[in-house]
Amino acid sequence: MIHGAVLVHGPLGLPLLLPVLLATLLAALLATLATGALRVSELITLQPGQIRRKAGGFVLMIVGKNDVEEREAPLGRGAQMLIEAWLSARPVDSEYIFTAFD
Image 1 (cartoon, helix red, strand yellow):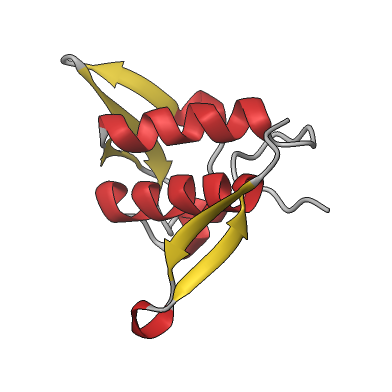
Image 2 (cartoon, helix red, strand yellow):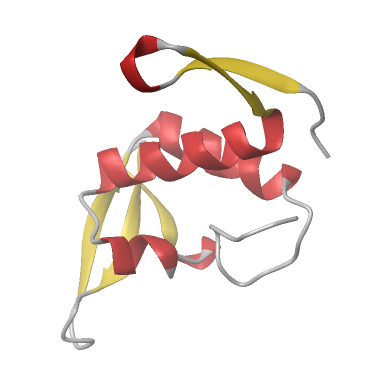
């Protein structure tokens, strides 16, 4: 598990000290949201098996809001690396990528 703290810029550019575990989660979550063009509901139900390699990069296989058709959403390499870091650091087991923790 990752311990320690990291300094980030909070609201209005003010410094904010976050636990490294929380910073890892937030970085992975925000990078995935930014590069994947996902709805929040799709983001929070994302599972590791939905990440696929494609043409030297990565895509997310997403079932749309109609639960019928699967579509590919882009996933940046940085986001994929942050997801890997989060999955190896998080203190809980879950079928979902983005989980709560104590």
